[in-house]
Image (cartoon, rainbow over all chains, first blue to last red; front, side, top):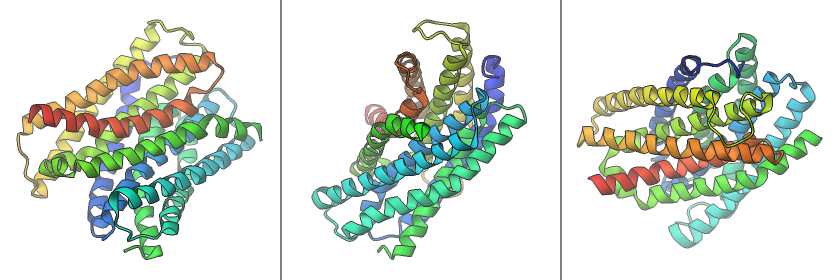
Length: 184
Length: 183
């Protein structure tokens, strides 16, 4: 599959998915601006958001790439998929904790707002990323499988679409968690 | 649980570094809040720009990894027909996507009443930023994929998190730098 891709096929498969990604991200940007700007603690939240979006990319992207690689080279099976999922969740918890701890330090020494408690600053990224992955993992696996089954290269198609889906849901889940935890 | 251990072990450091870079990116945006808000169209399309360069680099990395696994690219830093084909394919994709992104961004900007100053200069800065990043990251990813593959590691686990967060950090940094230089 990958061996035979011409530049035309790369454009043909990647460009439409990229359009979906662009539209999704413009929507995510608009929603982010409309929803998060209204919070009093916006200055500290705006520091967490790019980290969450970045964490989403660094967890979901490799998960999708590993799944598509396993499908292409014929090593995809339930056991490896479950271990792939568990590793992604474990990585997300560890790194979300790191985001929380660094946010606390930035709040203490740089922003100096003290509007969100320390526990909240750790809980918010953990819950937001776990909720996002719970939507993202089944969706991306299903898309990978569909793309592979219908003769598309999952590497070209799934990642850009999932970027839009993930970015959109990261923002929505983040907002949902803020509301749920009563963040000012 | 060998697959779990392999993925976790190979990814943990780079994922932590990438989240740290995400925090740096957020801090960079906060510090340069005035510049970003002076040219609001940049603010509107910044998430899409981050995502565009991140997506293309992710596609490139996963393609390079698969090429290396199936042997369609030799594990050596040398020019090959397959590599050139991938480069041109992704370059065309990024140029077409940029056109759509700029068009949609400006349309939404106009329809929401955002003041667009120096539109041609802004478009030039956006294109310059994305193309500079693409050329640099293509070379970086190619060399790094070969190196990691030779070391027996999966480039997907290390390079995708690294490059997406690097792009998230470098895109606003380059945009702000070019705005300061040209405007």
